[in-house]
Image 1 (tube, rainbow, N blue to C red):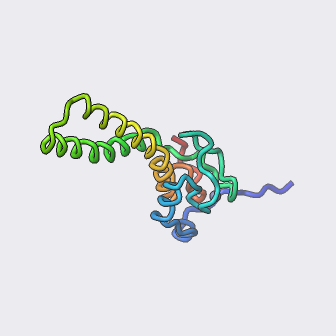
Image 2 (cartoon, rainbow, N blue to C red):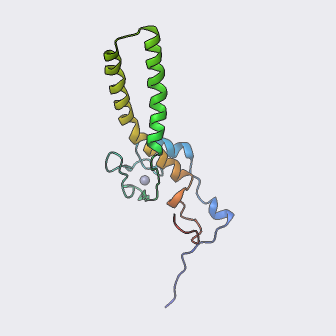
Image 3 (cartoon, rainbow, N blue to C red):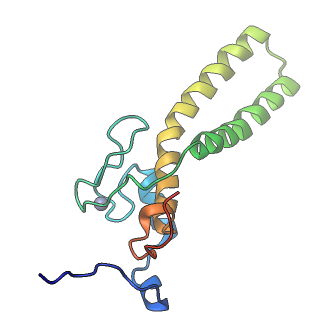
Length: 145
Ligand SMILES: [Zn+2]
């Protein structure tokens, strides 16, 4: 019986086999869609990615978004809410209960709204840059992390 080797040789040509546009992948991920085809849903729950794309079959399991989406959401929301709070306090000085009634719900809602799209964009970045298991031409002698 003849065995067929599926191992690929790492060459300059294999590395340039398929162009993956970073911005397109990020935009598709931000819309919570597959970064490759832009049609299949990326998530099966709020922050749980599907195993693969329902349209093109892209395997989503190699992503390693970890805590990066949460850090990015904190940075983005913090850079909006804190300057707004400082500006309102400086110019209008409303009562503390009124400020808390505005800033806490605004922070919570905007964080929850941004978390899934940001995670989708991070997965899109990882796919476009062939990070982790998203590179099908990776040399097989590199041990998995
Ligand atoms: Zn897809």
